[in-house]
Image (tube, rainbow, N blue to C red; front, side, top):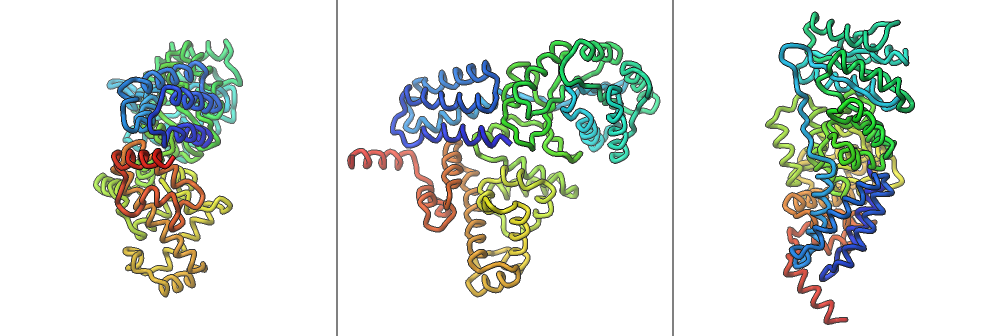
Length: 482
């Protein structure tokens, strides 16, 4: 997701590199490119202008221009403003004490309300709640059947009446929940292809009769600014408590995620990242901002893996997070995650894990690449997986024969794995800008090849990182040569 805005925004920020001193003119040129990147991502026009104004004002301040490497601070400012643009978010759902808590989902037709209702029910059920799904979308009889099927899959009861009217269905469902001791009622209301008076009046009647504790607007993130305009209209009518963005696993430009909070003042609470019922996640503005500026989301990846591995306890999760942060993991650890990686989806894996994309050639199917790498690891002994450094040429030949690959492919994989591990270890202690420079330096073609200029420049694998003083000395030498 957000591939276009990641690429364009990253290019704009990279142009700040290598300038001895950054002037106001340099900054304004970069801000123009950032503005273009945001507009191309279908971010709301007014939101873009205000965002650029805030970043520019902070960037041209004397405290930034006086720094030896002001570009680092500017990237940090962009990151902070992105976080502010999308947050803050309180993920808690207020629960009633003496009656069932009522949650109402609303939105346009095709936004994914019914599926989201099932996902939300699963999430609440796993938290120990007793949800009741309510089929209040009588405009589309198929929606009632769809919700019943979801309820059977989740072992969650579904309340429905047909023929009837949505207000009566919702009112009777709340009464039924009290009798059955269900503590959460999720109302799946009807949608339309567009907002009309009939739809709004129907929702207002449900709101008046059932008095929902929280109203969530479900919107398709692929519709960009249209989703923002719809959210504003629904919020004016119902006073929304939160937004659920769906289809973020698709070709999303990012306009809705970056605009909706600023325009409506309603936070994004959940995001749908796949068709599976487990694919509903909490929305974290800081993690989303990291992905937008190209830094990946290691902690998000670890949490996804841990969610799939139901047997993991909190202590195991903490250990796994520390391993990934430090890059202190071996091929045995890597192999244990492969089945979970398949369930997570390769796109999520590649996007969230720094350097992982280098293991998958552009012309190779990610699933095929995953199987090829898995075969290489399976052909190794336990000692080799735990300590890849002992793998010499004779071992490479044996592993290649056992995995149906070539010895040079084994060597290339081991080199890439070691560099990813080193990269992650370094990133754990790097500043925002240093991480940004390394990520985009290593993203170039051939960056992982031994002896590449990118690796030499970043000194990956040496444990050394250039200090501000060293960079200043290098710039002085370049000026003298000129």
